[in-house]
Amino acid sequence: MTAQPTVQLAATFDQFESAETRQARWETAALATGREVDRNALRAYMAVADAEQLKLAESWASSVASADVEIRRLKARIRDLERPAVEAKRAEIRTSFIELIAQAEQDRDSQGAFDVQCLLREREEAWAAEDATHTTP
Image (cartoon, helix red, strand yellow):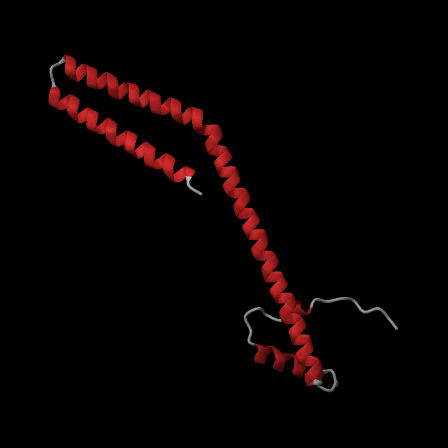
């Protein structure tokens, strides 16, 4: 008995073709080689091919899920590493707003000081919202 190479049956059909189309194609291939079409054997081959296709799909889904987890982990790591620079930039912006408010108050421009305080509050809220979106999974 000679050893035959193992070929995955799933590789012999398109994942989107119907079972009827696949069965007809396999019957045609069998008849073209002069073999009888054993419908029971053909159903068994199709079941094996379907099982292999399902296993391949599950494997693919698993690898995509693990890659997604790794990407999320790396993005979180980058945010952690960038956090000191982000906080330093925010502190710089915050200081410039505070200095602008102090200058407006010194110039007795209460409306200008109020406007800048509102801008600073809006900026702080935007930063808080940005931080909240990055911390939720």
